[in-house]
Image (cartoon, rainbow, N blue to C red; front, side, top):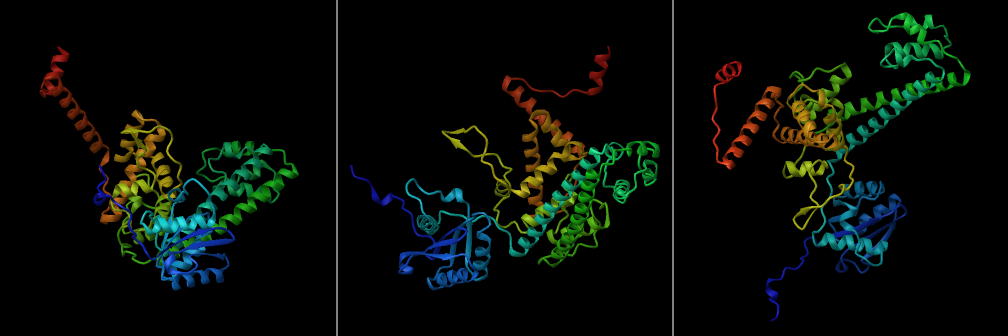
Length: 451
């Protein structure tokens, strides 16, 4: 019997005015439809004038949609240029454009991108608006500087340890007020432990005599040189970090759509003036105070604001948002069974920031803290952290999309919900066994137990 051809579904052209671009360090290959140019595949260099010639050729071919792979950082310059010229640029995941088995070349890659895009089989990755991308660059630079500052502090501590100056045993922070005074005095030439211990702040728990004993070391010249170099590096990085934070503050104030919320008090008091300024600026940009959520600090809120921005319209619902953050359960299913093995490794800075925030929920005296401790009791630590980060992501999505402030429910609300779940589970079990639960008076039960 012949096939019924009328019921067959075929691929249809969805984007006839599209192009595919394969990006490299030195050459860029572009493919358009054969009907739009006699030479449907062309290659260009990576200089700016050649990028402009590429955009001009796409204009002549009446192309409006462009698909390109996210190859390293080479795509950024061309992406920004095409976006300024009015093209609709889709940055696609290379995993979605893997070439079929057979030959592979730059020409075939760009033609494959064009073909997949023309049939509507590619989706562009999430990229926030350009003004948010500016903030993202500054925030990522700040994160790198913070890591470098921490590394320089480790170098200072290493140099002190090599001289057997055990300052870290009497001070919790060797670069605090007392620690910095002592380290700078050592670099300036002071070697007497009793004199160095006079820089002790009154809030330090260790007494002056103990600090003086910890500062008796072997002052070798090479270790002192390493200490001075590390201290100079620390001061230089701190100055860079201060300038970067100033640039972040000014960028936050210039973002479009800022909300007038400066007069409302902060849900969580800031530790210093700089943190308060940043906290107020983030609240004005996002419209809500994310730091009101337990375990979400100013650092995490800054990462979320720079990586996502205040507009979540690209995500249809909370499930899509959590999946993009790599916090949703895996969907590797075959034969109606979940496939084993680790999930594919993906890097998402916002999702990683939420995981770090979730890891601090163990000691939080809040609804989220109680939920996290309950998860730790029945799950291993990584899975519990991921589940709590997923809970934080749902709260953030609701706050940003609805414009609602966070309301703390408290640990009592969590205990009430848990008792309710236990009661419903007992009722279901009793119903399955043919029994019925009867609530008794607690006082009568206590009297019977005493008797």
